[in-house]
Length: 180
Image 1 (cartoon, rainbow, N blue to C red):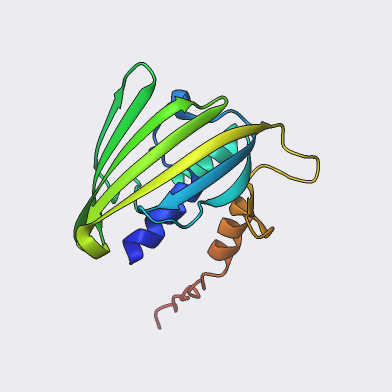
Image 2 (image 1 turned 135 degrees about the vertical axis):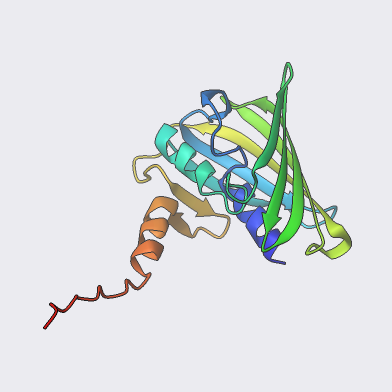
């Protein structure tokens, strides 16, 4: 279950590797991203993401366990209009893999399909599809990092990260006593 949540978070943010070059960066502006998980008849979940180059890179590097420490083995292959990214990871001490296929154009529209495999996933495998479409410049009332969920709730991912880091208690530093 933890892996499903993490992969869903990854999809919401965008599933390129943290050390990706600019060629895997989306065009700055407002993106509509529709995500579906599995082969269900449930409608895809839609969200809008306002990004600039800095927040797109930040969102990619914040993408859960698919960071270099948890996923030291990565293989990125580029073809004419397709990029595949394979991850071999260690999530909570258990092996996991993800095979991602990115098609389309990161300036206008793309499709990302992620197939994850782990013993933590029911049935051992999960397929997630994410369709992104560039809508234009971000509206004046939005700033980079804003994500508007399908129910209208808006959150700013960089601000959420700052808040969660500031909520971590800091241990008081011990003062050394001078020797007697």
